[in-house]
Length: 288
Image (cartoon, rainbow, N blue to C red):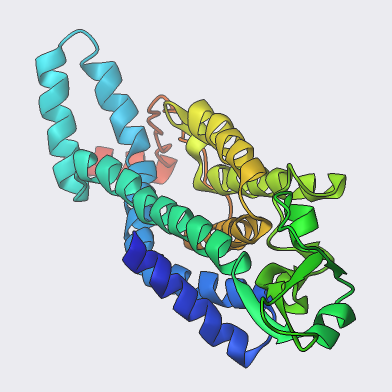
């Protein structure tokens, strides 16, 4: 975990050196991580497309061998083999793909908490220019931490210790990325809502609600991530929202829109073409 945390911090510092804003740095970091995970996620989406294509045949087999479990299993195995699908592999790969994203989110959580609470030495004029208030005791409330500064021991009126999260680079569209939604102003609660909303959108464009257990994936999981977002920095929520939107775009492009619902089987119909009169007459003449 320390390796991932240090790597994320180094990437953030690099992007921030190019564009001095941590919000932009986090978005660029998210794009890089999405590019890394693009190929395995694309393979998983293609497997999902194959599963959707074989739904009519699967329904037919289930209907045909409803009372014969052995024949049903054999027929289903042949169907998977025909379409080149490993059902266990599909389930395993979709679950495993969530692990890197959760690990990154966990590491990014610790990296940003350590990053934004790091004290940096700046001139006192700079601290005053940020509108910070002097305090002799480091406060524990996040809002107070990011609005105050302390002086360095042994230095008289020349330098100050400033929390990195209080610098202008930590602000993104009026939000301090170092704040926690449940400890900041009321409007910071928009971030857990955005996290849950984009996660729900991601599951809908994946078609999770059309599968067994889809309710758990499309509703409960976004609500769980949104609840977790209440106690993590806004910076992590920004990462999660951007990543989810990129995933939605990939799924829409792959599925060419929203996933289609499994088709219902239609009874087979036989069409009989009418026989023309001259053809009947010709057949009678041949018999003569």
